Figure (tube, rainbow, N blue to C red):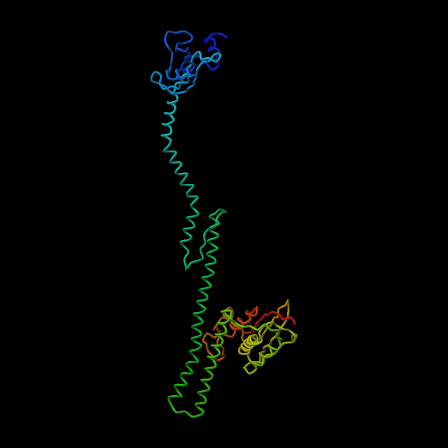
Length: 410
């Protein structure tokens, strides 16, 4: 098969010396004693430890120093017919590698501040964009207070921030509704207390004045009778106010007892017309509607509704005018209309009609009677019967009060 020298000349990995003089050294091909196979009086061992390990059959790769320069050494035993006949050591200089590493290190050190600066700027930009919704939320949230619940968080996009803002806005909507209802309730209670106090103060003043007058001097029988009659009338007024307030309080608490009967509408209307017949004003008449129309509800309460509406209509209609009660049926609902040709209601007062203790006559004069609770009670009773009450009026041309109630099928 030829000698060892011929064998190593045919090795495909062998490169000629000087191929890359700065990177590679010529391979050292040695016999078992460390002398070159191609002849030579000096040993060419590059690393004795690696050489000894190769004689034992081990292949090794390690870093050594050759003439003060670092190198990577590969040591491989040479076998022929299964026997180790020599050792080859190939070294590659690491000087260029270390030079490249030092150059790379210097480059990294030089560009690191710039890279860190760019990374910081990019990070700040991205963080600013990511946290912008949070800042917007903070600014919007600071503007929200108990006195200003109209502000809302901005909703942008469809991410988690948008979902959070939508949820927070929904919570604010519910909170605002609750606060508005509470404020309205408190205002209503305040107004109710003030108005009730005012309404009760008038008859109490009358009672006190006449009782004091009766006790302070001798009076004839006629004078005493007149005084007692005046006190009785004032007590009646107080009693009506208290009873009306109790009815409204029970209704507000959901404790208004209602009989669910099948009532002939003409019967309830007839009772109401008889009740107001003695009042000043034109006679109230019932229109030509089906006498068999029935409504579902409480006869006493619905009669009170029609009585209050008819009494208001007569009170504000001149004697030569007219007050008519008509009814019709459509879609299982009975529509009752009380129409008068009276003085009508000013447009600015119409939205407030039906509020407790509200009267168009702001002076609270009693020349035309009324405590301002009649229509409020009517609306409360109608709504408790699952119905509606509405008012249309043109000042100077009259008023139409419409009550819609469930029909009772016979």
